[in-house]
Image (cartoon, rainbow, N blue to C red; front, top):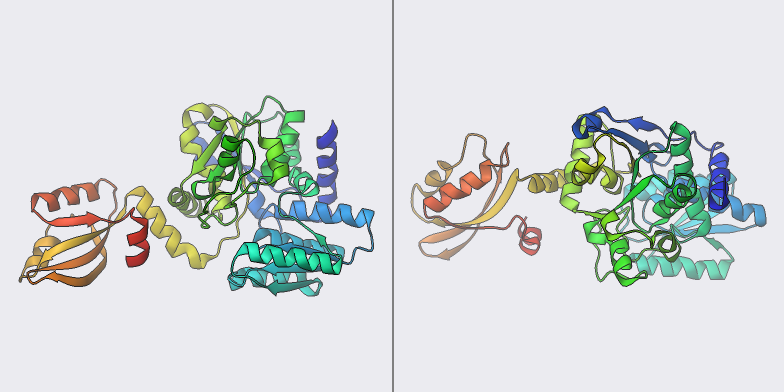
Length: 415
């Protein structure tokens, strides 16, 4: 045992007063599909349904050892980090102040409050996270509080590394491959640091959302850089800038080791895990599983660990997830149709639909000319090949239409 791993093992041992090791489960469905031993490290089964509790707990523990009279702990978060901090504050019996954006969903506010109880005060401020972060840091300076960063903190990284300790302790031999989600980089940095010291033959792949590829940008620039924009759908990993400390541990990664997962494809993975396996994953929690098809040839016959990092999914988002999954798999299309304004025109169009095609949306938009009208149509089907066939029949009939399924601007405005 050396250096960092020694500290990570102590962090892991301290967590046992809080919760048992999360399961490392063989998934029969995925193992059969890929001809490999696919194991899921179920971080979605911690008391706060994410790994974030580990880092928050470890950082707080070490502060209290050094300064038992520390008055208040402060964080800025709209999600899993806030819940981890709240849980740890209640465990240690210390005061915490959690700053959250005004736009934070009530469900997340309520969960944070329930985990922290009377030990935690929630302050809603700022429409955007940068404003919330600035307010939290200003409060820290005024109150003498200790700021608990979500990922760019040595003690937080050390706490997240306890995941690697549990993986290695649960197996007779180190796995061939570990697939890790990356947002701010704290979890990945901690696990990689342990594997380098204790299981150097284990390969690692990193996965980040396509709309928040901060590690990719940092590797290209040679240093952490801020992305010009971020798609917030994968809210547990959509970070504009990877942390300095995490990047120091990850900068040796090759570009081929970093995979980007499209948000719509992640939705399809979430639905599959829910419908087939009964496993509820948030978007960030599905990242490691989502890239398995890309690695299919490389992982055949090997032992692969996918870290499912969280399961804090608000089921009010399920219709959106289903919609995006259908679009990705080709089971749903939207198009604008120029329809002749004459009796029987709609019937002619309906006759073109196949037996597995169903109209999910039909909206008359406006009359573009005296003899034609514009219609927004959404079609759902059971097999992806049905919709190209429908388009071909429409073309043969001479209908003028435009597919807007992948047009972000039009889709958001019209759909």
